[in-house]
Length: 114
Length: 116
Image (cartoon, rainbow over all chains, first blue to last red; front, side):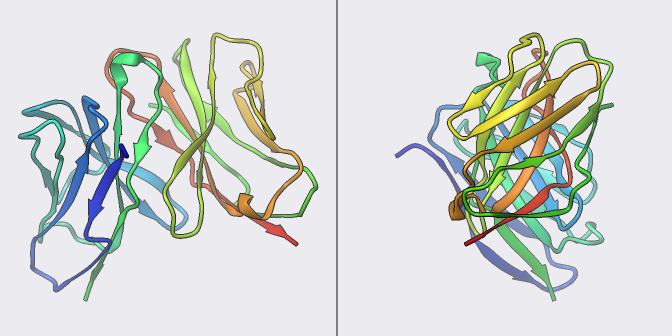
């Protein structure tokens, strides 16, 4: 079945450590996105990529980094520079060339900083 | 920049009844898409319904329909014959209809509880 796989579902990190969240899609979508979800704040865009080897900052990119070496993969690294990393992270993809505007989401990764 | 506002943090409805979730947005774009997404507890976020701004007819998907008022920049979601499986967080979202991709701006969400 086609879809988006995020791993791990739950992750605990000590302060000062970098962590990488995985996102893989087999939908053959060109565009991929990372959103952060906090209670009462909705979803906020961290980074997005419309094509391999290219990505752009979203609204809250500080303290995060990404790569897009393959069409199927868009990992997110939460660095020690991110001041408040505890959150729920959602990866999404879209076939934006179809101009439908619809995003397909993974099940999310919950990061907790101890 | 666009903003999306959902003024109802929580709502509750009796099973089989109708409920309306509110959403307003602000934009200077002339053409855009509007969406309602559903996020059930501990489950994947999925698209409920989509509206294209240049279409005057309100979108409908089975028990879900929208009331799109472009001049008022309002986009409410009506759920008819509510079911227990409708219990979820609902997000309203906006996307400009440009070639720059599908960067959605989301509202803060409305948590809907359907009571048996």
